[in-house]
Length: 168
Image 1 (cartoon, rainbow, N blue to C red):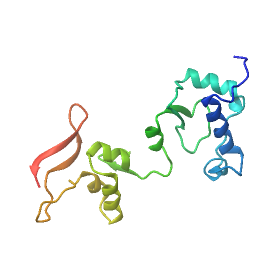
Image 2: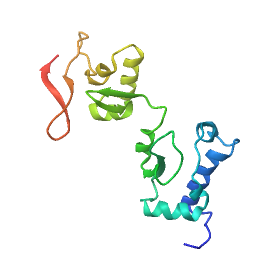
Image 3: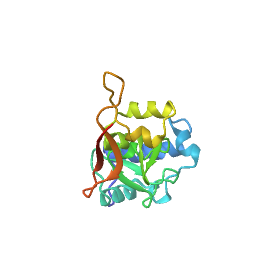
Image 4: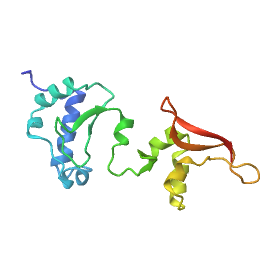
């Protein structure tokens, strides 16, 4: 691969901004990258080397570069191409909750159990136990009592979250 980089390529922009976040103190979010010691490996100093790795490792439009270990640098061993949703769940600032030995971000728990992210966050802010915050049903009847099925933090044989059949 000996052609020169095309500055109009989306991948070139990914490479350029990745390097700027780690090297340029005047760039937005430098404090989260270069300021924390996050570096780009020497190999990826050359755009064509980065491009070759990207194509061999699943790069396509719509995916973003993600550091598997958020405290590690940008390198072939620590990076992957993922959707925006996956990347947002791999942020060092995420609040993670463990229920029955399974750890997820609040957003992931929200999708798994069907309770709004804001509801889970509010419950935690008001002092709820984190496990209870993601397993208690979200509705009350006209008398203020919880209705519906209590969420059971166990999986069925197909890997779906179980719901207790007894009404609360």
